[in-house]
View: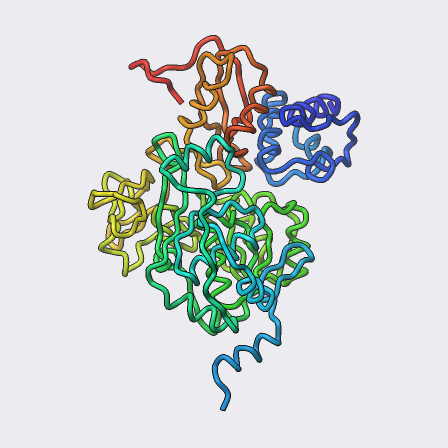
Length: 73
Length: 412
């Protein structure tokens, strides 16, 4: 599951020519560690929803990979 | 006998903070020094640093010269299209005014009546639309009183947009400290608000949605939401994060400034604007005297904002959606036609459809269906040089044909 999240995060990063992440863990922070702003987070939401069918921000804010995993499990 | 100027100088010694950006603090004295030091200032302001924007703005007002305020992230392409009316980037004015105190500065600014500012907003024709405002129109909603002297403002809008200018004037004309929150990482917002004991914040629902649900911020007394529709969930989140704050919801447009405000999502028309605003076929229509579009020759201006009438007398209504095609992305209006034209200008693109998809974080996310040979990354990177970042579609789908309506028009 986490490897799919890494692929989605890297897709968002690649689209803006950011350096890709080699590894993430449950504590990886979307803003600080991935460098995501509000538009990046919105894009991440759509891509996660496409893969898992869940709108991760529907129930509130998401800050870490752990919180994404909790929403989609 | 102590003159007003001497009193002003004495007050200056107290050296109140004017603008705070991270740990850099610009006092009102520093502002005065800079205003007196600068010999020339440009007519077209393209500055990125908000403090520089405010300096340029105040110099233009003090010298009663027009100013054209542009987003610093306009691409060269966008900029050259906007300026093809003969405006000259190198035109500047000499600063012929000296001010001795903040009180004198504010007094001079409030006395001016012929100063004008030009802003640009997303138009329906494909190019940003020019809007010209007077000082009175720009500061219509500003409240100046002893009650507001101690306010500390969190500044969360682009300083070159009307909402940012309104917050700036509300803070500046009351000699408040204004703390920059615009484009700051959201995990730093609570830190900055607590550190500088911010009492007032005005921002888009998207700004508030990005705050941590678990945060509690006690020093803020007034929260204002504007720029996009405030949904119930976000309203509840705001009240939970700012338990000591009153929430105000405002409706403002670049064309007309602030027109309505409400404590929830049901708006009424202010009595003094009763004759100037009406609702026709559920659309808000504004008298032309309230709007700043040059050469607008009709009596009424159709805003494109569609409302649901809750009660007719007194008139109460709720915002539903927009009649025109503008897409609100986190409080910024995007014209899909402008984006489509730009994408079509890229080599290898045959056709494109730009549309909105609802998004729980920023209201709407911009998507594009494209018939073409470039990759998503290539298109996004090429667009970075041509249009502002918020106008770039974040989801691109490659298709073999575009959705059309029964009449053959593209369907968003």
